Picture 1 (cartoon, helix red, strand yellow):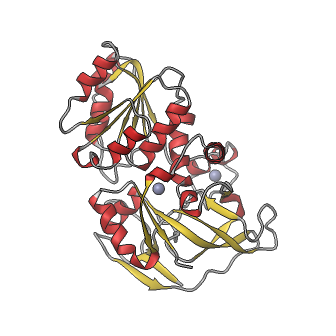
Picture 2 (cartoon, protein in one colour):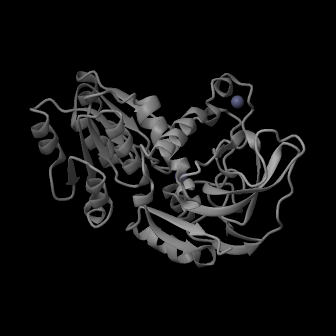
Picture 3 (cartoon, protein in one colour):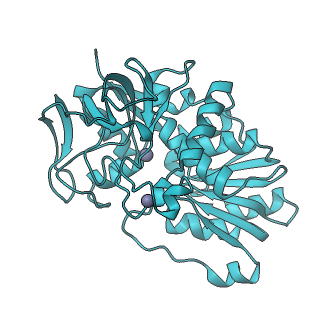
Length: 346
Ligand SMILES: [Zn+2]
Ligand SMILES: [Zn+2]
């Protein structure tokens, strides 16, 4: 089978390579991959800005169909349509695992980062990491369950969105636009989505179409002035950072009210980010970090997709067959993409 492999560290070094179809253990299933999502962290790894255990098959966002199962697999059947958490390996016994926080396990290993990923034709996975994708969504939409679970973990489980919160989302990529839909569904009073000049053509327009009360191009507008004007001088209750950049964290703290909270899900790669400490401490602010997704956030997302409470379709802006992967990788690197999906022709 074919697989997209990062062969060595540094920028680039990505090749389409022939590899054997994996065998399965008793507790694993073999999944025929049907749709694969390209994530910002894949681009960081490809560009050499984030470490991965190379050589490695890239990718972690996907959906597929179970085509074979081990003798001890009890909760899934052949033909089931599934997606998978990233915590494919975790000890299941430490305090974090026993709380359902498999993503925090010291022994966690994730596909496309620590072990072979999903940009291929077949993948062997343990049944405990799988979730069925709802019947009412396509495989392409199912491949967006993982970033949706990341957004749910951030805004619903970590930031604890409250009714009537005034929310500012910085970074209108896939996770930002999913966070937008979630905070609206859970009763935010107003939502502002901020991005940069190159977000204006697609990402910020999509935020507006999805119902954002105000979009801000931070390269041309002053986010602080706008947020304080919209909140009668008080500032935002909650800032959700989906950019992971120094300017996003800085601006995020500037626009918060006293007792405001900033929840960051952005992945900065290998760079360190500073905090405007005095501003944050003199205003009693909460800084909340949210990493990856918990098992429970997947359950939330499955239910929200089933009920139509979130819609991932408008976020899928690019589709390309697997063999043309270079086209979507190039598009994704240029940034004029929300979610790019690779699919297999058959
Ligand atoms: Zn991702
Ligand atoms: Zn553990």
